[in-house]
Image 1: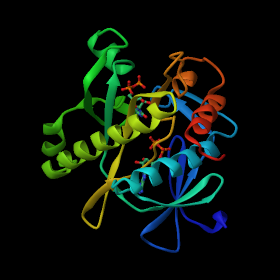
Image 2: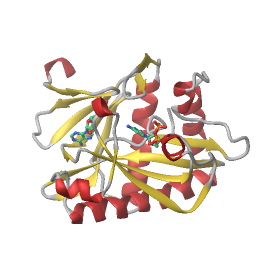
Image 3: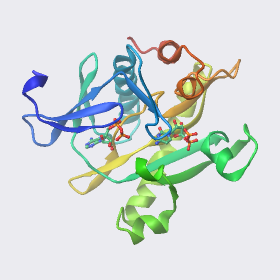
Image 4: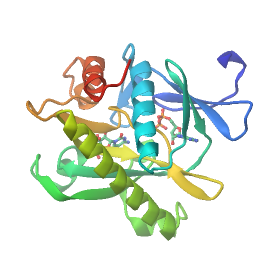
Length: 237
Ligand code: ADP
Ligand code: CDP
């Protein structure tokens, strides 16, 4: 029973609870949705359940293709068991097409397709608006080692390769996404989530956004769009 578990953190979209196993956590996907560093918030019915199942599918797909992740198993509609990680306070973003903060920051045109995907690090700090950082900031402040930086880049690009192919097969474009990593027994692995809350997915034919941009831009049908993507990928909801 979740009532008996110790809540260890309540983020903007997920809650983490301790379990009887000290090395495992219960991750609860809530319907809460936020954007602009938590300034815009809304609960979208059914989103927690879709994201939990979406994430389980992607994490299992990645694990089957050689990416080590924290995901252990899906337990209930909106709950999964994960390995407890010591999270690095950085976000890794890969972009295949220019949009979002990149265009705002550099004044570059939207829609430029990169031949080689672009990698960026951001500091995970809502109060500071998750600022862009580079490798030197990470080592200088002890947020991660040089080896961890190399590993984060290597795995994040591998994820890009695997997921671009997967999405392309079902008529979807993976535009960009954010992932996070953490340490377990000294080794680095993928943590957090991969869902339409943390990536941009466009319909390859119409160019329509099927991700959290629908929430950011008040386009409506947010959960319905996540369902469309899940359906195309063959995820049973
Ligand atoms: P936020 O922290 O951005 O508000 P969430 O609501 O998604 O986001 O909260 C999930 C939190 O759990 C994040 O801070 C994330 O870094 C952390 N986290 C994700 N996976 C793990 C894990 N396996 N072990 C410990 N913490 C994790
Ligand atoms: O979303 P925004 O335009 O502010 O930022 P971005 O840097 O263009 O985001 C790049 C990708 O990372 C998008 O797919 C975002 O959904 C995702 N992201 C995220 O999930 N969480 C963040 N804190 C920042 C970005």
